[in-house]
Length: 367
Image 1 (cartoon, one colour):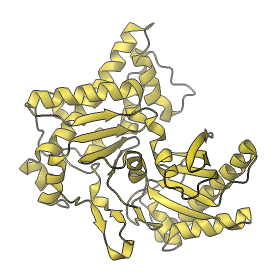
Image 2 (cartoon, helix red, strand yellow):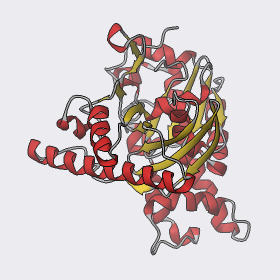
Image 3 (cartoon, one colour):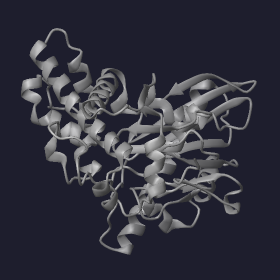
Image 4 (cartoon, one colour):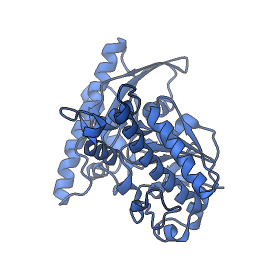
């Protein structure tokens, strides 16, 4: 069936524009598809019961029993600490508790996916921006590819196990849950696949809600021969709701300066490490619904950048060209779409990125 979450028109030159309604984060579980697993999440939206922040808060709550030291530890690293504790053979009680915590989030993921598969009337009524066509799309899907920091390693394996268990309790055929190696780098590699030049060094970035990943890719004869990963940066100026338009513009300017600086430094670092001048073709995955460099103006921390002009890719390209004193062309790709580019050609498949929040991408997307 045609994908109702993609919009293809003459304005996009035959390319697909992913629509903001594809998000699963605001779906409310008005009715749980099966009871007796985690009944307390009934009536909550997905973003209220599953996110990186909620995982981190859970780790902090049970840190003593998990035997995880919190002092001096970046909160964003706590999910990784939970994963490491789950594999800690020297601490049986801590490891068992870590597995239980991960399993609880696996149950929640299973309930979310089962609700999407069944599309019961109560949950449809709680999602008025979806038509029957949107629910039918989720019902007919076969494969769900889990990627992202919260789907890596042992966490991903436990999530898949619990999702299958939830579907089994309902007597429903589960989605085929696919895990992939190095899933936390999937957005960067998806962007790299869009580089048009066949040879050279290319800066590739991933602008996330909580962090900025910086990389450079080396290509020879059209093939990627090397990927260098630089130290990531924290995302800044990610406030979504602003008290005034003046404050929105101010934070947009600060965010733009920060992103420009991050790009310039990544370019310089790529040049230093490869001893080659990087290409002016730069690919960026961004946590925003974007098409042709135009960002969604209403959703996410990057939405405020629309206050600087209609096409942020052009604004950023012009700024970086001035900083580097050479012509630069930047292409922005929706982060979920960037991930899905790693799986081109797969039918009846959705990529679900498990990170700060859930991201959605479709391997069939044409960009």
